[in-house]
Image (spheres, rainbow, N blue to C red):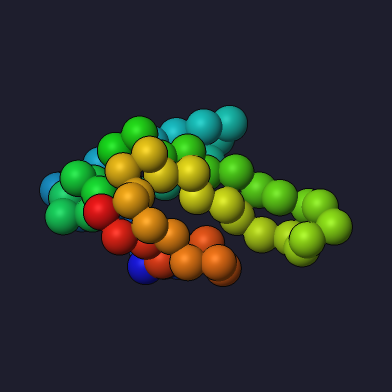
Length: 69
């Protein structure tokens, strides 16, 4: 399951990605599942929210919040 949350600090083992001044932290265990994933924000007719496009996912649920590899 994808989980976004605000974090108070950076763990030394975290991988840090930055785009347009926004930092995204990924813990070491999750990084293997998320390699190649892009994060997009949708503001269309089907609703607002973040969309994960994960090339490693073999199956996803209809809501886009969970996946299998």
